[in-house]
Image (cartoon, rainbow, N blue to C red; front, side, top):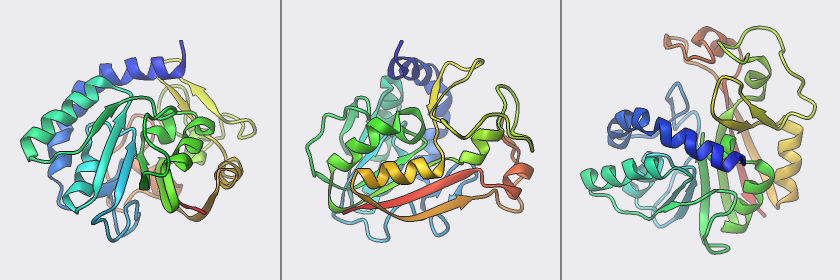
Length: 248
């Protein structure tokens, strides 16, 4: 099966787990990002002024990022590969009284008009579960000249150190050369990760100028460990990366 089909089944199966977090995320007064909830001031995934902007979120999940943007006066569109994730997003729209379009589609083939948006954003959505050689050209197509691309992903270093099962350690476990598609033996998902040089070349080839790369670490007082990384590891090495680029 294609990675699109595999990942759709994976996220449909996990939708109930994320539904339990959705209400709290929708209710947040300020955006926070990644697995450690880094504040917007440290990882400016969203621009300072959102009012009137057309935004598309590629891999919106339960829609909380789009909800934050809508509350600030933007016109978001949420797109996701999982129908069950979008069902949770619709329930949250009813509960919070926020309305914006939700589209069940693959971010590698978004059924949206050319040059219709000011911002394309992805926090652990298209940024790791879609092939960047397919979704980045689509992001470029959707953006107006001067529009911004903002995405958060696992750091390349983390992906070189994380084993098939268990948390990342201090050894490199796979080569960076040729890093692209990762299928985990113990997981029903397929991810995509690349080195920084490959990312820069891909973005520039699609008309983007890279404006910033923010390496995200765990806060000093963080105590929460995840299956794939501990807070101790993430305080020493970047656990995530925020990429900010602008279309020429």
